[in-house]
Amino acid sequence: MQPRYLSLKSFLPWKQVSHPIDWTAQFGRAAPLEVEIGFGNGAFLVRQAQMYPERNFIGLELEWASVQRALRRIAQANVHNVRLLQVDARTAFERFFLPQSLTYVYSLFPCPWPKKRHAKHRLFSHPFLQLLNSRLVPEGEVQIVTDHYPYLQWVLEQVSDTGFAVHWKQIPPRFDTKYERKWYEQGQEQFYELRLHKITHLDIPVKEEIRVETYWVECFDPDRFQPVNERQAATVEFKEFLYDPKRLKGMVRVVVAEENLVQSFWIEIVQREGRWQIRPARGCDVVPTLGVQRALDLVRDAALRPCASE
Ligand SMILES: C[S@@+](CC[C@H](N)C(=O)[O-])C[C@H]1O[C@@H](n2cnc3c(N)ncnc32)[C@H](O)[C@@H]1O
View 1 (cartoon, protein in one colour):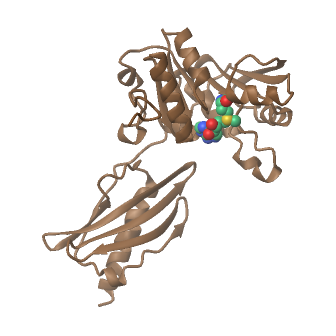
View 2 (cartoon, rainbow, N blue to C red):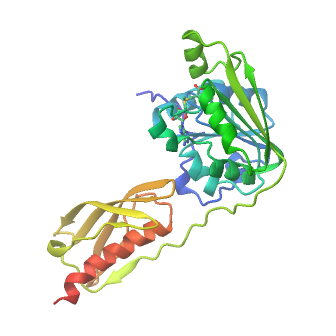
View 3 (cartoon, helix red, strand yellow):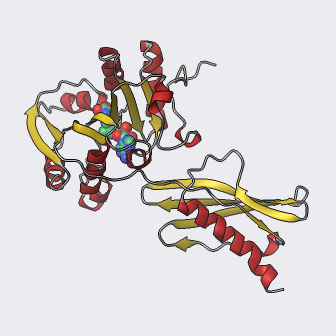
């Protein structure tokens, strides 16, 4: 069977590499780094990569279907200077890029979330612009193109104290992306281009990851195991619990949400030499964060609680 993506060579499974990411190692060379947020089917990203072979391009996208389409284009175009990550751009900028490491950031037709009650989902908020500033080299730029005038106005309101000088103008269609064509075919002939030029540096360190501590406990009773959800700095929600009495192994699925990062994974409670080990299950790619540690703490507490009352 021929997969839709043709080749996974340009796909970077970011949970399996250490952060911040060593981009020189990933591309096999040092070169100016440019990032496209929300690349959709990858048409623009691949064209840029073809036009500027001396630069390295990183695409960030939430949707796997889009990642597959873009991987297909990359394989067909035979370009080697692009890496794609399926990730929320906020997580990527917080964790994957060193301060002052990027030359350019693009976002063409970011979701405008036009309804007021959805405005909280808009990406280019004041804190996100500050984060972009910190990851850009001096004089680096962010380019945002939108079809939606209220979104342009909203981004303009976010810019003060982000270290950027801002310019915007009306432009005709010129990027030939799926969404630009969509709006053009619906009769829109003018779009809005924002350019944010970095003039002062804001220092925001890379978000730290931790070494997750696993636990050994003396007793574990699967019938009385009831981990308690928690809503604090991280939200930890336990979803389901499975137990295999033959293998003396429990598995609890947990969702951990902290800031912009949501992780769903299994924690295993497995008996070894008369004791029980609690750790993220093998095969679950987990970003080691305080929230993940908290989930392990809560599983340990739930394992110990019935023993303490005996
Ligand atoms: C309206 S589409 C535009 C796609 C493409 N740039 C184009 O012009 O055809 C917006 C894209 O941004 C992606 N996206 C939205 N929020 C994102 C985020 N926080 N991080 C990465 N990608 C995001 C969506 O999945 C979607 O593919």
